[in-house]
Amino acid sequence: MRHWFERLKLSRQLALVSCLFILIPMLLLWFTILRSQQDAAIQTRLREAQSRCAQVQSQAQRAAELCNMSTQVFLNTPALVDHLHRLKMDMPPETPELLEFYRTDISSLEKIILSNPDLYQIRVYAEADGIHEMMPILYSRSRMERMPWAGEEVTSSSWHLDFDDQLFDNYPVTPHIMSLVTAITAVTTSARERVGVLEVAVRMDEILPDLFAGTEDNWAVLVDDSGGLMAGRVPGDGPLPEELAQAPDGVPSLLAGERVLVTRSYLRDLDCTYVQVTSLTDIYRTILYQSLYLLAVVLAAFCLVTWAVSRLTRRLLRGFYGAFDGIRAFAGGDTSASVAVTGQGEAADFAREANRLLDQIRRLMRDNLEREMDIRNAETRALQNQINAHFIYNVLEAIKMMAEIDEEYEIADAVTSLGKLLRYSMKLESGGVRLEREIDYIQNYVALMNLRFDYVIRLEVDVPPQLLGQRIPKISLQPIVENAVVHGAAVLASDTAITLRGGMDRSGSSFTISIADEGQGMDEAALARLRRQIAGEEPARSSSGNGIGLKNVQDRIQMAFGPDYGLDVVSQPGRGTTVIAAFPYREETEETA
Picture (cartoon, helix red, strand yellow):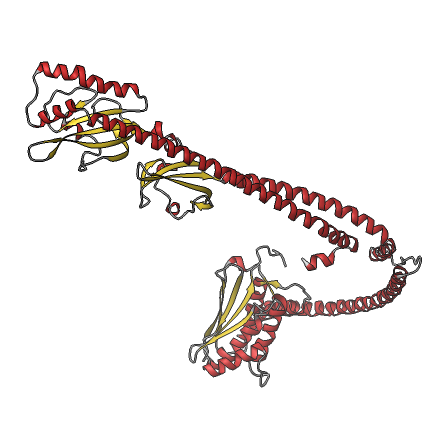
């Protein structure tokens, strides 16, 4: 940011500084107001959630009182208790008695259910089967065993929450039932004995609708003391989030990656806790949108004020910008341009110094023009030397034709190789050469070297086609091959091979050319010394060694491509020496030399 600011014009720098001192405090004030709005919205949402919790607590208390009152009415009906006792003692009443019991007692109890719409059912289960069931009040023991809570021991009153009514077959199942189950006892000769079970049930989805009508953003559950789910619907019908138990009450917290507000209310009559989860995503999203809108407005105002202040300061700095215009005209090619000196002060001093600088630049331009003329003369001399090179090529062609006429084909091939060698080495080129041209040059070199020896040096080339078009410094591989001939093949004085192999790096950003001989190799001390000589850490002892030539190749490669590329040497006594040259791989290469 500091470098970017320093590159701006002086007028824009002044404009930015002025705007920052004005707009940043205003921006902080606006964001403080947005934060206050967010806190107020969260507090409003908290009060609404607490109000719902209080309402749920009141509804649960009213339902519990209704169930307890109905339970007491049924338990205090002596005819019902006596009838259950006779059924358990296997002393069922006669038919007239049954009809009278149904018309008087059962009918009056049924009216209690019909008169209170909040009750779902009140059922009495006898301790015997094969009895005369009197619906919807009296049922046999086998009916009770169909209920989900029948497996529990019923001794005193207990609540059972959120289960399905499965009393009858072939009838629609009624979900979300909450019932108060109480044992009905009678006094016998020995002690008080259970003669039946009383179930007073209400529908939870009517008494506590928030438990089952929740959405992804707002939902509620009933949990026990250990935090286990007793009733309610979790979004996605999944388990309770693990973070719910640790979420503080009435404080924004993070639940399953979402900002929520958790409120709790203990339902004493049901011995459980009502947990209300309210999403705050919409509040945070609204504040975010308002913040982005505010930021856009501030940025627009910032740009507008910056532009206005920049125009004003530019008028104040008109003298400096006039000098800049003169210098810019000079840089655009008008070498006679100068800076007008007007008025007094810093702007006039700056204009005079600028004119002095322009005069110095004109003198330097004249000097550069003279040097360019000298370079042109040197190029003319180089062209004359090239003409002399063409004379040499023509003479070699004549010698080749004479050798072919006399059927001295070996001499003709040698002259051809020599001509190619001279043409390649004497031609002026910049930007490097294609790898395939360097390999062709090396092949001609090895062919000429075979004329000197009584043995044969084979050059084995294994280079992928995609590398042949890559550019490398000219005559950068031939010195390595020459070292392999002089220090490898010549020492053996027998038929041998030099292998030139190319390969891509794993990253695909570079490639290597390895040149290996079958010579005597070198020990670790000699290899370490050679590596130091290539790296320039130790000077070569004499020109007869191979350190100087490899050091020159290393310098040329690094000058062309940087320090990440260059040479490496691998050698073992009796196993020859391998020199590895690394070059950058370029996808787009010039196809023609």
